[in-house]
Structures are given as structure tokens and as C-alpha cells.
Length: 365
Image 1: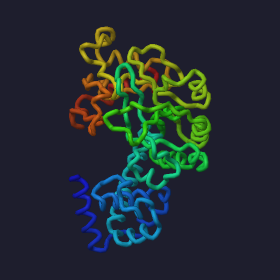
Image 2: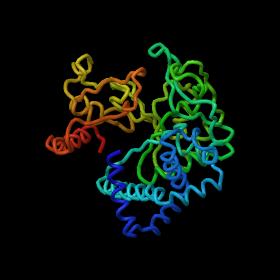
Image 3: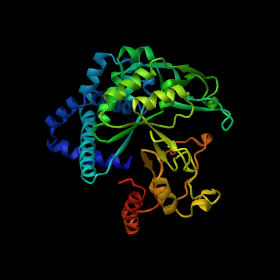
Image 4: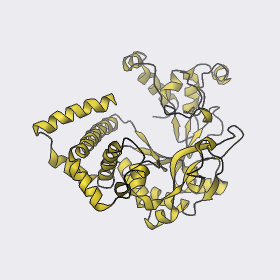
């Protein structure tokens, strides 16, 4: 909130002086027309309604009536242009970062969530693609008897088919502007989705749901793989059938696999030591520390595994403990990862040189 307040002050001064490059912002709007106009309009209307979800807005704006949207745009042009201005700056900065990374032979990996929040510009603007009677989640299980209720809207696969998967392909195209490989998050849920009635009490979490199979999952994924100009990865797909996993392998997807014991690494995979769902490997209760010794020995062995990609994090290398995520602990800051070291402290540890040496020993460079 403080950052946006500061950004608004800067923007307001530029706008008041008449120094806003309106022609450049309109060029950017046209270049990003598949998402930016709806996104900026959604944000400003949501502010106008005190951050209430779009289905609680005034009916004309909620239902995207043309006259109501046109009138709102005219009345709130300055606010809408602010979001264009912010996104333009982010776009330019990301391009500079990407070009710098390419020059250093560093790959940037991105993440494309296949499912999106019900209260989002995407759902508000593309309602025909979603089944608003349901949200998605995870079923009750032994480790979590009430399951999980996520904020994702369920897809209407008939509407997605009518759209010829263009919604997904356009998102892929945008991601490719900035990254050299891309993970498709919740790939397994694309094949079969746990659907929970939207009106179901939140306290019930994942209860009262059911699995719905998606007959077009293979077509959609094949279309994404064919359209992509960069490697595509999936998150772990343990619950998929052998036939479904075989399809992903044959189509050329790499699966992110969690292999903390360094066993069973497949060539067509990207293997990780740990993730946000696991306790840090250096946890004193974890026998791996006794087996492998310190982080350098563990990562050296890890880099020598058969997987096409071996993915580790600075948390692994520095043996930083991080609490394991528990389903019942879902909260707004659940996915926050904060490195308890400054950039200067990291540089003082010569981390880059050590990681390069480990990569060379593991034949990763």
C-alpha cells in the first residue's frame, strides 16, 4: 500500500505537469490489448466499490454493460491511465532484467497458473469460460480431513473449447516475453478438477465436492506445447495415471519432481530438493543431514542426478530452515518467502562462485 501511494504521488505530479507520455501509453495499451484494458478497468472499478468482489458491484458494471463501462472510463480516465503507467514501467524493467540475464547466460523460469481467482479481471471479462457455480480445491484426505477450498474459479470446458483455447495461448504468449522456461501450475487439476459448490460454507473447505474429468485436457496441453517457443514444465503429477503421465512425456513436458532423497530421478524431469510444501532439508530431524553432510556435498550429488534440470534454491544451499506448509494453516501470507539475508550479505559468501563450481562438478554447465 505504501509503494502504491508513493507511485501515485509521482504519477500525479507527472500528470499535473502534462508530462505523461499519453501516446506511448496508448501504444502500450494496443500492444497489450488482450489483457491490459480489462485489468486496469477492473482495478479501478474494484477501488470504486471499496474492494468488494465483482459479483457485488452495481449490476451494470458487474455485467459489463457497454454504456456503463464507457461512462465509467470517461469519468475515471486518470485512474485507469495510472495502472497503464505502472504496468508500462514494470514491462520495461522486466525486459531490461531479461536482457541482462540472457547476456549472463542465466535462464529465468516463470510460473503460469492454469486456474485463476474467481474475483479477478480474467473471470469478470471472460465469464463464458468459467462455471461460476463452483470453485476448485482439494478433496478431504488422511492428512487433511476437511480438504481445501481454493479461490480459483472452475472452468466451463465447453466455453473453453468454443474459444479454441485462445485464452490460455494468449497468456502463454505474454509469459514468453520475459522468461526462458515456464511452469504450468496445477497441471494435474487440468485433467480432473475437484469442484466445490460456490455457496458451500467456507468452513467446509473441500467437503461436498466431486471430481470432474476434462475431456479436452490433452488437446489443450498439446496446443500449448505446439504454440510454445520455450520449454514447458508441469508441477508434480503424482496422482495422474500412467497413461496421462506418458502423454506429458511424449508431448515434451518436463515434470517438476520433488526428490529430496535423490532417488528415482527421471531424465524428462526437473528435480527439486525442496519446495514451499516441505520442511527445509537441514532440519535437525531430517536424516539427510547425517547421510549427506553439509549443503555443498548434498547439492554436488544432487547436480549429478539424471534429471534434465536440477533445481535448487538459496534456501537449500544456505541450509536455511523454513516451516513446512500445513493445509490447515492457509492464510494470506502463506506463500511469502523472505530471505533473512541482505544482498550484501549474500555477496560476501561468494555464493555465485561456489554454485558455479558445484554446477561444473555436476556437469550442469
